[in-house]
Length: 430
Image (cartoon, rainbow, N blue to C red; front, side, top):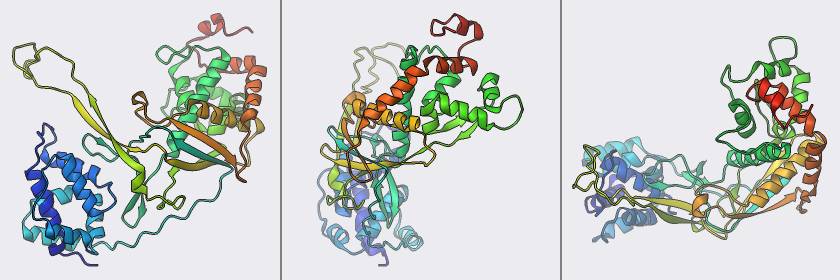
């Protein structure tokens, strides 16, 4: 399926005419090219070429086009998938080519002759030790790293054949686990949850909430000595075992303790149940929608842009409109967790506590302050049986039984502001 200028010219001309007739007032410091590139990226999430071009006209506020016979023919041709793949892969080039001369277009087409294979649904993943199913009760957003102006795309990954499919990242799930279990531990020990003025040093905050720090000198000597014993150099097994036995949630998730410490759970992305992922029968594009937000300008005075002083000149409205691509209400996501053979019973119970906290919180993704990301979770074992999360109570019992030992360990590794503070703190009753 070789691409020719006769097939792509109607598409490029349509994009050019759409930009020329756009009614939008562009105030972007990046310039018109980047502005229209961002809108093309946002439109390219549509399922086919004609839908992409239609969406593009909508979001750049362009009137209904005329004389589109050649365009319709191009969108219905066998090369439409190649053109769409090119738009998705190199939107900046497409915007540039829209204004390019015919010779330049022909040279670009010679340089870009991809072979787009017919996409086949991804093979469904086998069951996990713990299967996770999330039911979206209110629109879910999960930002991508692709820049599209004021349009925030849902996160996607390339699966080949010119296709990028949406997913909720395992890293985001792990971060949610770590945050919830860190706060649960601190509350169980009697610490006040105050991220602005914590009762412990900053490195220990990162240790709990982010899995550690890599910066040299950030970790106190007391912690290093705990990990390596009286000798110098690498981490000793006794020090690692003491850390794992004392703070099971860190051991279960892993992190950095002078050097990387392997976790005992393996988290996997949550995938929307759809035809393309091979785990549903609904086409993926039917699961997504856009939500429109505006950060309103409530300033009632006048501000001169040059002098930044109050004057009689109007600096204009600075309200910021934002479009967010979301997974619609009623959608389902599926993923899971596999367990290492080295996981200890207390760490498994800690995992159940994390699942229960995740279930109680009932939220995923971004824009939560706007009501996004309300979800309901379902957890089953590899045989499809509902998991009894009552084992989470056994982890709580571990924290109660080892309350003083854990506090002593936190003091011994230099996590508090200083020894005098540790001695005076009401938490410690040696």
